[in-house]
Structure formats: C-alpha cells, structure tokens
Image (cartoon, rainbow, N blue to C red):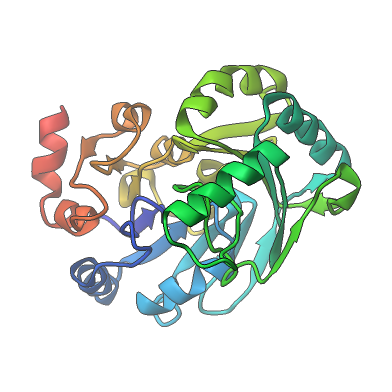
Length: 296
C-alpha cells in the first residue's frame, strides 16, 4: 500500500508553464484524503515551493518539502525547517574557476536570493536572445533550468550579478552551472572529474548542472525521513525526470520516470508515464499496475 507520493517539481509535477495541471492536482488531493502523504522534492528552496504545496493542500494534510536537492527539509504544517549543510567560500571559488575555464554561467543559490556570474560573451548572447524572443528590457538575464534566461524573482527576491569572486557570499545552499545543452554535454565529464570526489554533482536538465555538499541528495533526505516516520520502501512512490531524482528511485519501492525524462532516469525507473505536459503523474496513479508491468 502506498503511503507516500514523492514528486520532483520542474519537468515532473509542473508543466512547461510552471503550473500544476488541474487534473493532476485533483487526483493528488484525493490521495491525501485517503491518507497518503505528499512530498515535493526539488532543487528549489521552500520559498519557491510553498505556493504549490498550498495548491495541493499540503499545509492541511501534513506534506513535506525536500529542498535544494536534500539540503533542507520543511514541514508544511508546522513550518519546522531542518538545514543539513552548505557550501563555503572555498567551494564557491573552486567552481567559479571552472566556470571561467569553460565559459559557463555560475549561479549561487541562497534561501532568498542568488548571485550570478557570466562572461561578457554570454551576456551578449543572452541580450540577443532576450531581444529575439520579445522579452521586456528589464527581464533578468539569469539562466534557468530549461531556458537561456529566466525570471526567478518570485522565489529569489534578492538577486545580484557577481562580476568577480569577491562579490559572491561566504556561503550558499548549492551552485549551478548552465549553458546551452551542447556545451554542457561537452564539459560535463570534465566537471565531474574535477568535483565528484568532494561534492554531489548531477545534471538535472540538458542545460543545467547542480553541485551540492558531499552526501546531500534527494535520496538521502528521503531515506532519513522514511526512517524517522517508520515508512517502508514498498510504501513509497516516486516521480522524477532529472538525474538528481535517481537517488530517490533507489529509496522507493516504485519509481516512475516522466515521458520527458532523461534516458538515464528512464533506465533507473520501474516504469515510464506520460510527459509533464500531459498529466503524467495523474495517469500513472490511475494506471500504476499497467505502467510498471510494461517495464518488467
């Protein structure tokens, strides 16, 4: 019997317009009414997750948030928050040098803000992209999980351009490297080789790489929560689309990849559902046995 449903956000629960489709929302609330607990597991922090949690009535049904790839856990009902670790200035310096070497954008994420570095070459490319796509002149140049520029001001109200290392803060939750998907593919193995022994490094979308303190992952956070709440592996259903979701797949009895998921995620899953723009989560909940049997 499923007692917990755990969902990634971008590319999984959210459609490409950053919304929860109504069919999916209603089905998830029905699950809560039956006693199932919902958990949102994301690279986002709680400030960028709570609006969605409230839409799903997780504040009423005692849902939980796994933030920043497992860096923190937030209780939607009690508002208690436990933060496990952070990256320091030495960590930032190390990744900053890699961003310079490979000409990548670097974003340092905090609870309520971000610091963004990119070269003049990238700046000109972003400005051209903003003009070509008819974005307003004040639209931020900060890269997004799925686009060259993205407006994150709602979840990260304090945003700064860091032209030099000295402009970055002394600590942050995670570091993100981004560029065009082809460029990330070219340099990803080199990044892993440079960082993998001392950090958690995952490619969460074709254009996005996230770096967290060693031992911090969605899967480790989920496993700890399961242990604290006496939840068994076969009582957990997980949905995801990015490489950072694979650690959760290992913790769950049933792991479902979205139709739009990266190939490595589909290979790690027990089944594949429809994509995030076609109510993939709702479809899987209603057709779980059929989806998992196809994968056997």
